[in-house]
Amino acid sequence: MNLKLSAYDENMLSGRQGKARQLAMETMVKVAKAFNVEEFTDIVSVQTISQFGELHVSGSGWVERLTCMGGKCCVPTTQDPASIPFSVYKEMGYDETIAENQLRLQDMIIELGQLPTWSCTPYYQGNTPRFGQNVAWAESSSVSYANSVLGARTNRTPAGIDLCAALTGRIPKYGLYLTESRRAQIKVVLEAGELSDLDYNTLGIILGKVCGEKIPCIYGMPPTASNDNLKQLGAAAASSGSVALFHAIGVTPEAMLSDPFDIHKPEDEILVTRKMLEETQQSLSTKNPGDVDLVVVGCPHSSSSEVIEIHKLMSGEKVKKGKQFWIYTTLETESLMERMGIVDQLKEAGVLILSQNCLMVGQLVGSYGTLMTNSGKFASYIPSEFAVELVYGSTEDCVRAVIQ
Amino acid sequence: MQSYNKSEKVGEDMENNIILKGRGLNSGVTEGEALVSKEPLVWVHGITPATGKIVDVRVKVCGENVKDKILVYPLGKGSTCGSTWMLETTRYGNAPKAIINRETEMIILAGVVLSEEMYGTQIPVVDRLDQYPDDIIETGDWVRVNGDKGIVEVIKKRSGRD
Image (cartoon, rainbow over all chains, first blue to last red; front, side, top):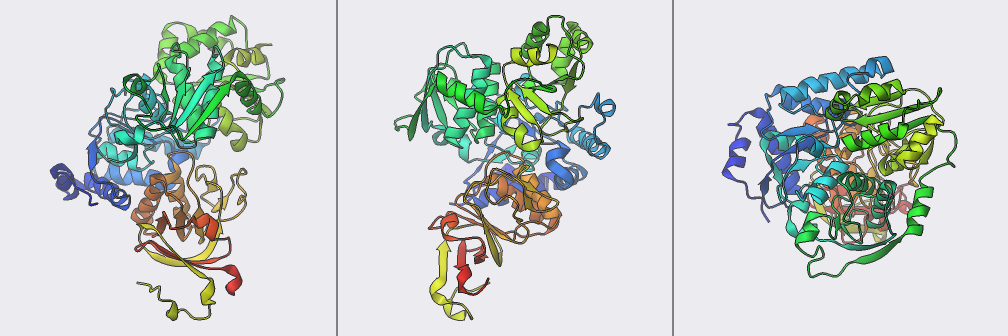
């Protein structure tokens, strides 16, 4: 198999469209050739990794090289959360070197023409591809959402290659861009009755463990599952495993159009019961619920509905002295909440809103014995990243843990 | 180009050399001591770029160092940032000499391609060998990797190289 390049690809490779596009194309061609990819495909949007915590000095150097060559994004391009919350990093005492590097990266991505959204939920910010469209997104939870919930198509685009795709509007066509690679492999039968918001997170953790990088199809998911539920489920499955696409009968778009297994038999079949959900839920906590020093929510970034729910649950109470409650969200959501008066009330109650940032790519400023979260993804990463105990529970329990 | 004609080798027990054939994903020829993980490896937060040390407490090879090793593991796991974590490991001079997988992720190959582009470090990568490399190769074995031809030659530890 030989790589067939279009006239447009050849033109970029020749350097006639500038050095940045030439280097971006050359880099992707190397990767495409190694994997015997036959051709490139157009993409309609990109989500990049542009946080210093993941790019480090070397990856930032790569972004800088393409910026200095005059690179410009030719499709709408957003990026994952930054390593600092831009509006409050100083007062919170974030590491200055990291902050400087992140601010330099922000200048560069703006120079490149990226929209400085800094969120893992680009689909809530207008980077919203239609069914069947190809995109090149990095960051596992947004990849899962694009593929599964929107029915758009993307691989887990490698950091560094994401920018090449943004500068050229092209990506090697392999993996999940191909219809035959999107077929379900594992049949998951859900017999657990009504599902709480937390259950979707827990189900995601189970899916990731059972499927690894394979594609599950879930039978028995309530059609009432919200976008936020699917966001949480996908993020969890992409953290305990590498699930980049899941189908759910009656819920996700590809499963509505055709049988996700096509004419093939499932490679494996599992039954998820209430008991399994409960056991998995318990296993995610490293200690029994009790004293909690810090609650972290917003992984992936909290939607407006999720912030409103926290505001309601606080019901005028304040975060107890010695405890903290942090919400990671988008600047757009914060702005909406501000106009509703919710931000002021939450701040008054002692809740900290960290927009455009994430604990996993940022910093745990301060020292804490026990963290609590309502996110399956946070729960699968926090115990190995930080020397803390972790409690995993519902949003309601998270709020209760700091106000009582 | 290195030859794999057995008669050219000296000082080895010929019977113990194993030749595996697979897919060469990144070119280059090198040899070195194997570090083998039978479990999938995570680069992001799993390997510290500044030291080359494996710090993921969930894997048995935790505490080992990938620097200058022929790194063998079944497959990659985890985030799409594996490429830049691997690139940063190269920047510190702590990259493995070569990588051998059952199936290599494009994320790691991207890290390898960028390592060469940014720092001129060539890291041969071979996968899809005719036998599972993590079954055949053991930590401490001497391994020759030909990334152009997709050939891996294993000289078992007990044959005198250790």
